[in-house]
Length: 213
Image (spheres, rainbow, N blue to C red):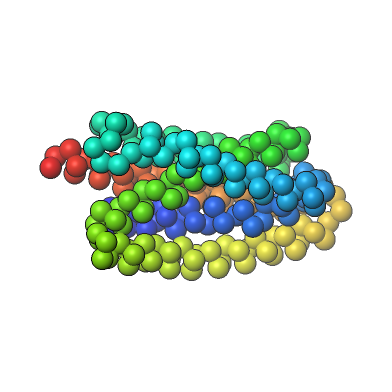
């Protein structure tokens, strides 16, 4: 079951991470930022990903036998990071509904935190699982199977976002543009929750098997 749980979480996380492509357009349409400023927000997301992998890899997802491998440390670390991802998406949804209007600065900060919360769950668990199960010979095959499903789902998601982008661009009212983006963020919030559940389950099972062996 670990394979299928990793497949689900990795495919979902690929979609969330790939939203990077739409961040500049989202910030222009929903925060009224300039094109130049919104492009920097995309870079802020990427910076969050980089810092997360640089600072948290060893602590949140250490290799077997590492300093932080006691109990179910890794599974709860992944759950915590993806709970943070879900929280940032929920805040964006409140902004899009004008329940909690946010400034461009706070919106940009949420984008940074979102990237920070996604990077380690996206990059490390599935890669370590593929290496452990497939070794040097078959790990690439396992990783490729994750990518094939992820890219397949990404085609449909990108098509949906592209339609939203086009529709929102036809409105002059900021509130209508925000409301047009709302279904996308509802979908991504649901996906973040699903990724948290499936990844937690996969890593929990791996840790349980490791403890019993």
